[in-house]
Amino acid sequence: MTLTNRDILELTEWRRDLHRYPEVSRFEAETAKRVVTALAHLGADQIVTGLGGHGVAAIFDGDQPGPTVMFRAELDALPISEISTADYRSTIPGVAHLCGHEGHMTMLMGLGRLLARRRPARGRVILMFQPAEEDGSGARAVVSDPRYTDLRPEWAFAIHNWPGTALGHVLLASGVVNCASMGLKILLTGKTAHASMPDTGTSPAIALSRLIPGLMALGTGGELNEKFRLVTVTHATMGAASFGIAPGAAELWVTLRTVHDAQMADLLASAMNIATTEAAAAGLGVSFTQHDHFAASVNDADATAIAAAAVDALGIIRAPGSLPERASEDFGVFGWGQTKSAMLFLGAGTLVPALHNPDYDYPDDLTPLGVAIFHRIVRDLTDGP
Image (cartoon, rainbow, N blue to C red; front, top):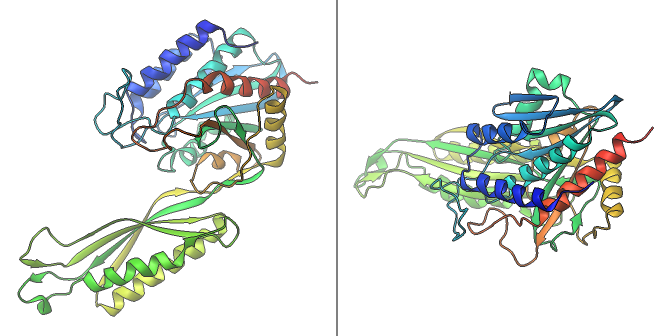
């Protein structure tokens, strides 16, 4: 069973409509409503809303007992202004679907159409539309929702479109596929002074100038192995925009990145130690907050084998390349505990803008491929004895 030409046309228009009305993490209320409206026509046996925020789960039951198989897509867009002349470009200033999440939702909706025509023989299939992937909070919020206990699957799969890989080719491997990352805000506090008498205040200027290279030296990237550490300075501010005031405070944002979760604790401790040392030397106060914490995303070997078998059975080309990717993803949270999970990376083309670029646009040609992969996994896991 495959999508019809009419399915593809309607799904393409639905994807483009989602693209017109993006919403950032934790504010995906209208997007969730659009999903629920579309699902209502597919006859799911149950639709759960408000999961972990604005998450939506559609459940399709089989006739016989069997495994629960979950497929996940993301609801949220990015706080970036889109550069596009397409008639479906974002209508929301400063917000756009520049990571392809609306395409991932469309894959799930396409799978829902096929499930509406033929339920799984055994078990059940869950279409999970997850909120807040972009800030790393969504998957944790969903699995922490008390209602998720009744939904928890034996198997979980996701697809992410992937610029830089040939269109329609699949990158797949077991083990870590996305790095762990965390945002760290460092606030240095001293005392302002008149710019003609800076000695009467306590300025963070020297401490900040020393802290930036000191933190960057903690992690310079390199090969993606157990020793990989990367510290990226993303934002810094100091004092007021005035020529008459010597600054009394500074704020520095850095992103910490490691391959494994265990390494993150060590890198975080090292970064906080450097900041504390520099602040003390300058007579400054220092405080920290943590943000956008992504656990490493790890593909289970058995789930990866299931996904690989589906890709191979469909004759889809496996892309050369290596994993993990430096970028982070919160899908791995669904693989904690007893759930076996795997994410596939579906090539969006080699000569296209990168994810999060202001001119990126999800290729609609990927939708039928993604649906076919998901549907083959459903058949392989639910049609057996």
